[in-house]
Amino acid sequence: MTNAAPSIKLSTLRQIAPYLGMRGVSPLEFFRRYGISPQVFQNPEAWIPRAACFHIANEMAAVAQDPFAGASVGHLIEVRSLGVWGEWVLGSTNLAQACALAAVHTDLLHQGSDVKIITEGRMTKLVHHFNGHHGADPKQVILGTLALLRKIPLMSGEPGAIRVHLKNPRERGDEALEEYLGPNLVMNAEHNMIEFDRDLLETPLQPVRDSAWKTTLALKSTSDAADALVQQIADQELSKLVTVSRKIGLSARTLQRRLEHCGIDFDALRDETRRSEAMQLIASARYSATEIAYMVGYSDPAHFTRAFKRWTGSPPSHYRSLLKQDR
Image 1 (cartoon, one colour):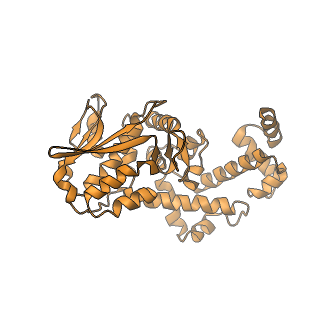
Image 2 (cartoon, helix red, strand yellow):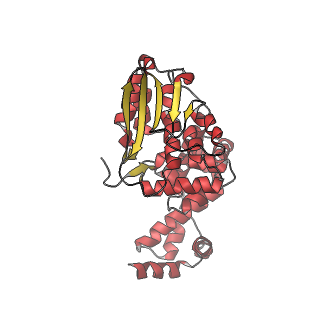
Image 3 (tube, one colour):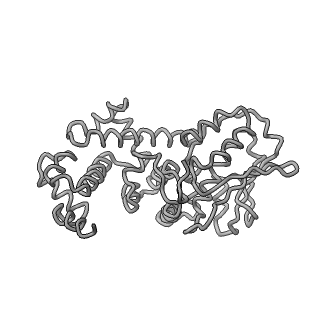
């Protein structure tokens, strides 16, 4: 079902977590600013307004002090990690079918953008553009999208035959893009697109397992742990690392290692889950502070009050009164 407003699926933004983690930035704190922590792991099928996604990507680049952060994040995304879209692309018999499915079903990932397939002479082009008003600078999302789209013709096994065109002008340090977009870069281009030899279209796919598979695995385990915490947060024993890791079929050390790959500390994820659940419960106006304390895993309401003050700067009673004033 197409959304009325341009939006982007949250699953395409999850790779921001390991990217920031590698740079010493807490993904949980970063995403909290946008009200999607820890939901970024628990609800990857959610849709985020496109303008918000552009702002998030730009802030990520600013925090990491990396003008090409979007390309790095796109490089971390495996095609197979993107749900039905990825399954259809990888299930293709050849590159032509993979490109067609990727283009036709762009709306499974992005509402308000499209990919057109154009064949001119000896070249085939995957031209990407956003529809309508951007609302914010889309540069980082464009870089990430092209890094992901490039992985489709890469499955032909002919990386040298692929060129990436960017409308961006040349800027200092842009040779760093070659690590994520390949050496055949065309800057100041007419379109943002991937271009390759049309003779490759009949090539059977050769799925490439690059280093991104480790990120896919780590993100899946992080999502599984986040889901388990939501279900079991009321029980202090069931929300411990050992119990959660056992529930999702991993050893505690393996889960801890995969969380670390995403820049996540288990105790911080549990605390953030408690905060997120408590905020939703208190906003519902259906439960007392004492009831909410037990529902999010505190055996002593006083401990919950202290935690709530740490999260918001005020006790639950004051926060509830503020919510009433806003209604």
